[in-house]
Length: 373
Image (cartoon, rainbow, N blue to C red; front, side):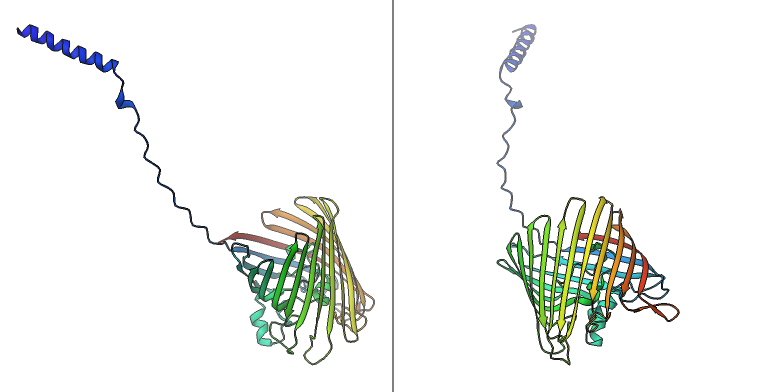
């Protein structure tokens, strides 16, 4: 074969191979099958979160009698900027999946001093005043057990000002009922509409025992509808170290949401220890004018004329008007006018005399925060 013939044959073979390549399927372009997926491991459940909340509460108060106001609970200073309370709280709620929990509220400021002042042991006042609450919880079926120190279930108001409708507390809150208890508490959720509670505690405002006797509390929370909540409380026990008299206290609070913007609330307290009796009622009305502003009125009537258990020793009334402003985020401001009246001249003046009334203006500022860890 000549060189020309060999070259021609080579070109013919290359042409045939090219044509066969174009006509045959392109197997190289078919994607390879994915490998079988590896089963993913079930993620471990996240550990229960701890809620952390806190706030700082400051106020300025002015008493037109020109002295520190009397028969007030925490707004006790005249013409002064005051740190009322700084608080940080840690809590892990119990659930059917995590049946053990706890709560601890740590308090600092003038309010902590005033609450702790009721502790019977002087050294205990310095220790326990910083622990508003501290208890451990256990859920067994429908019953939650709490053991430790906790705030009282009595009354329509609480120690934290931002959780109340008004800034200043009623006389009933400060003088007719206790602040806290130490002991055992059982809470039973009987139904979505009924919750029952029982307490066995040392007594009123005493983390340490004073007489060896225990105080019993029975309570119920009724919520027939989303707009109605009714609290009923009864407490009985011997509360005085050098007396064998039994103290009884009945307390009830009813709140009604009459509309999305207007709510009312009423509180009644009746107490008796031996021959001493005291009682009072408070009525509240709240208008939520817009999401950032509400106006609240409170009227209170007191009868402490049979022994002076509430340090009044007479009959009295209070009238309070509060303008509540949510400024931004967790910052809230409250502007409040209040007048206290009495049948006798029990309110001091700067000249040493007394009169039957005192009027104050108060500005409160509270910043709150919260999160989980």
